Image (cartoon, rainbow, N blue to C red; front, side, top):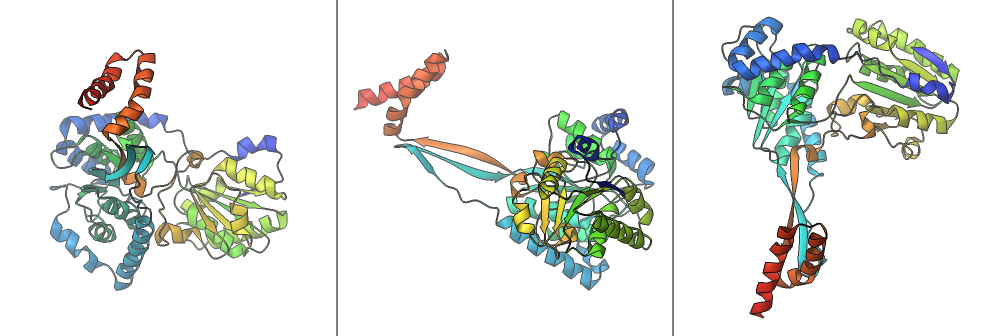
Amino acid sequence: MKIYNNPSRTAWPALLQRPAKDLTSLRGPVSDIMATVKAQGDKALRDFTARFDGVELTTLQVDAATLAAAGDQLTPALRAAIQTAKSNIEAFHLAQQTKVSEVQTMPGVRCWREARGIDRVGLYIPGGTAPLFSTVLMLAAPANIAGCEEIVLCSPPNRQTGEIHPAVLYAAQLCGVTKVFRLGGAQAIAAMAYGTESVPQVYKLFGPGNAYVTVAKQLAQLDGLAIDMPAGPSEVLVGADAGANPAWVAADLLAQAEHGADSQVVLVVATEEQAQQVRAEVVRQLASLPRKEMAGASIANSLILVLPDQQDQLDYINAYAPEHLILSRADARTFAAGIRNAGSIFLGYYTPESVGDYASGTNHTLPTYGYARNYSGVSLDSFVTKITFQELTPAGLQTLGPAVEVMAAAEELEAHKRAVTLRLAALASSS
C-alpha cells in the first residue's frame, strides 16, 4: 500500500479512482450468451454449464429432498451461526415495515400508500471463489418478509460434485426460497431475465457476481428488467484515529482485500507514523492468509492517505463514497455525523466490517464504486413496490374539482377536465 502524505486537493481525483477493469470488452460475449439462452432455453443452460463449469447437468433445479437434507451436511455450530444471523437480519428488516398512514389533504380527500411484495424476484449467489451463503440470508430473508410470492435462486454447481454448497442450500430453505437452480454466470442471469422451460422469468434481479455477471445484469436492465443496484468490486475505507489498534486496522483492511484481486482498501489516518505501523501489520498478517495471493493483489492496488486535518478526512471520505466505512475512532458517532456518502458505516474500535457481512442484522448488499453517492444498500424497500391510493367523497370532489378543471383546461386536456365536470354536474343536479 502506497502512503500519500497530506496530498493536495488537486491530487485527490487520482486518489479516488478504483482499480477495476473496463468491462466494455465483455459486452459482446455476454450478449451472445444471453441471446442464446433466450433462444434455446434449458438446452443452452446445460451447454453453457458444461462449457464454463465443467458439469453435465441432467436436471437444473435442486429437488426438495436435497434442500431438506442440506443442513445435515453442516456442523451444528455452522447451523446455529446461520440461524443467529437469520434472526438478526429478520429483526432489522422487520423494523423497516411501515404502517399505512392515511392523509386527509383537504376535507373529503384522503391519500395513502401501501407496499406490495414484488411477485417474483431472482437472487444470484456466487460460488466460484467462496460459497456466499451469507448473501442468501441477506437477500432471501427480506424478500420473504416483503411477501414476494416466488423467490428464485441461482448458484453455480461445484465442478467436482455438480451440486451447490450445502450451506447455500440450507440458508435458502431456511429463508423461504421457492426454487433453486444449479446455474452460474451470465447464463444464470439470462435464465432469470428471460425465463426458460425450467427457470421462471423474474421481475427484479439481486446479488453480486463476477465481471460476466455484472455485465449480464447491466444488459438485462437495458432490456427492462429491474436490478438491485449498479455494482463493482467490493471495497472498504477505514478512518482510524491514534487510539486504533494497528493490528485490528490491518485485519479490517485484509478482510476486504481477500474478497478479490480487484477489491480496493483505503486507510485514512492523521500521521505518517500510524500509516507506517498499519502498513507493517498488513504485510505481517498477509503472509499467513490462505488467500494471500488474491489479497496481496488487492493490497497492491490500495492506498493510505495521511490527512492531518479532520475536515480533509471527512471531505475525502465523502468524495470516495465507500461501500463499507469503518470509523475506528473514539469519536466515531460524532465524526459520522459529517458523513453523507457511504453504503454502511461501522462505528468504533469494536465493530469490524465482518459483523455486517454476516450477522449484525444490516444488509451487506451495498453500492460500490462510488455509487453510495446516489444509491442505498438493499433493504426491505428493495423487494416491494409502493402503490398510492386516493379516495374522494362527493363533498371532496366538489371542493377539489374546480381546481382540477382549471388546471386541465390550462394544459388543453379536455378529457381530463370532462372527467371532473360530468361528476360535478351530476352532484349539482341531485342536490
